[in-house]
Image (cartoon, rainbow, N blue to C red; front, side):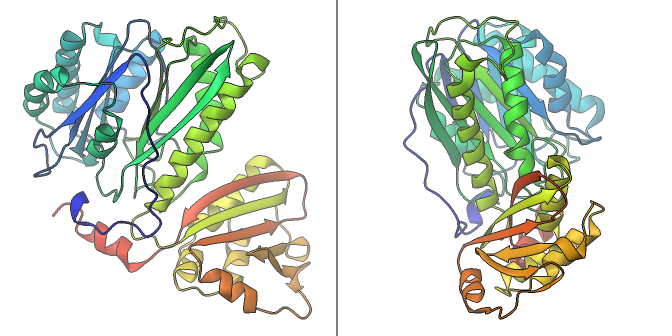
Length: 415
């Protein structure tokens, strides 16, 4: 149970959260799986809110992922319903029926079209999600929604998370100050194939859905798609980005190229910062984690190749257990580079830990002193850098160590 786990030693406190004009939200206890905690979140969006989404690449997605993919082309959002404790995955027609009934109830309460309702579920796979528990709890929850329900929402979507996750930034867009604020949940079954978890971000900026989609897809690549806890991609992951338009910034043309339009530069940077902070909070709450790993790869034949090498290092059980044991065993890093199938050469490879170059050009650096590296390994944040000496490709990824706590949590996840 989420509330029984000790808080991660890498936890960060919630930032001081603001409101996003045009968003009201809250959480309730619907008794889906957990006792004595909230497990149902509802958000309502002002008329005219646009939406973007990125979803898991799993070939066995949950019914809510299918629902969201189907309605996303309409580009409008009126409501979001999220539950924790049951993922509504591998539930066949019953799962689709639950989505339909939940969406119909939310659309009626929010006064929006059915195709403007977004659904997300997280928790156990393969158990029927009784929609009566959701639909019965929604009316009272709807009447309690407030602009400042963000912390309640962040707590309501937790499963094995040990602390709630949120981030906030502001930016200038066409003469107006806009705010971007988001929440996330994720702790295990986290590997990048979008989205590695659930995350819901909202802004009061006025942006057309195509621009919003282009920005979200681009910034997810270097944030949520660069984190891994355990190499396992969830069936239920998504990141949704809602733009209410309440800031009344100068209009952004629907046909604009969002990735090259200079007026969107500050907004894009702020969006990146929110997604990056949320992604790292997920890694900080990796199941059983005691150390955060930052992995920089340079000198690859391409950025994609560098990313694959970085993820191979971050996913290696041998690297992760060495980090957990504070063992400066750099040979494990060489092993991970060599096995991943990307262009690499032992005789051009260099490896650094904590800023100390250990090996270069196929051999240990002459006079290498392990003392500062051993000291670095005792810290909570471990920096690994690899230069392949093959080209100009570069990437950064984040992971965590692998401890017995991971086994303890996942060996009894359903009980």
